[in-house]
Length: 520
Image (cartoon, rainbow, N blue to C red):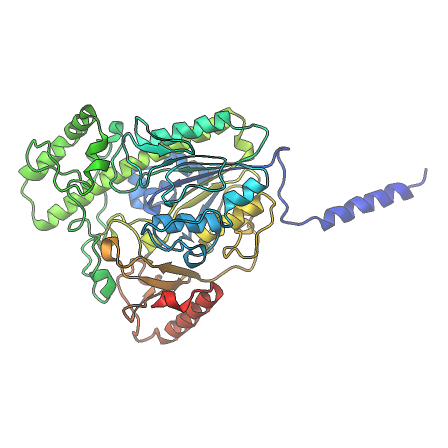
């Protein structure tokens, strides 16, 4: 018998194998992969225990951490515009705010008819759905199904909008979103792959916990940041903000404080219709009783002004982290559902937030700034199709990278006009050319919290911020000053790096086609 046909066929097989793309995805199931995209609102990296921050260690998030244990944790993931609506638009489009058209939370409607990840996936036969917080003013486009919160949504008994109705639902918002997500998974077409966005309201302001967690951290003392009493020396824009926990947080609405000992009346509540106004009388009384001892303690214990400020920080963190507890439970519940219904091995799970958040750093709550706590955002991805699932990505990634990454994960073409880049090769551990700097731009001034408009560039070590309307620059050496307390712009020894960063910022503005009118 001649070996020639056998050898020829063997060589042909080897040649075909050699021609296969090294980045092609392994297929563990015959169906196309699903993507479950879980996004919370204002969830700080500091409040996820997988990131090893002291706060996260005191308030662990085991279910979110499991995604890192079984997948990839991103160490340097950032947003492009640290504000709820604009960040969501960055994620949906893979483009910066000035390109996708949503730069501010000012009532501007997001144009969902433009190229977005749900539109692209829907065209490729994916079932698409979004459940929870939307916050883009316009109705969702590109989704076969949506059940979204009205505007910001409320923690108790919120209104949900579908294609046909607006209806109040009884219950706690995180649990409702989880329940509606499972209901959609149950009724979807099992013959089609899905792209499902589960968007939590929590831990957004005003941080109202689920009743079972009202007292969860009542006796926990969280660390006070070293710069909690920042005097903002050398940082003009920081000195004019209005987001200080002990000066600017609403004592009733935000901090749940009452008018006196055993009082059932809140101090200043700017939006009563979204807090007590959504609770039943029984729910209000349960809430007041749960907070009574701590509120009484505020009035019956003598404190200095510094001690009162620290008391308010503890109250803020107790509530914020208690809302995170319910979000973590939700992640665990959905994970278990996927596992029980044989979907886990064919579903990519993404956990992120729309931006970072201050947990007392610089004395602040909220976001908006290019400073690290606001700019940096969590990202954990469990991708069952990776050969080496557990890993860390330390390169600079950004939320405009999400859409192109999802497309590559699903073996789809990435449109040339997307400004982000797929970081799937980084998840695989491949050595590829990658960016060494990020561009950031915050537009909303005047606006809530009086944060000045600014843009800037960040590298691994340095950050240059241009408060362009004020002719004011800030430069930080993150290696020497990770808390961003010392503005070294114009300082001796930084002239050369300052010059390089200015050139890099100009280059990024050109690369991302930032119109000069948005720098005035």
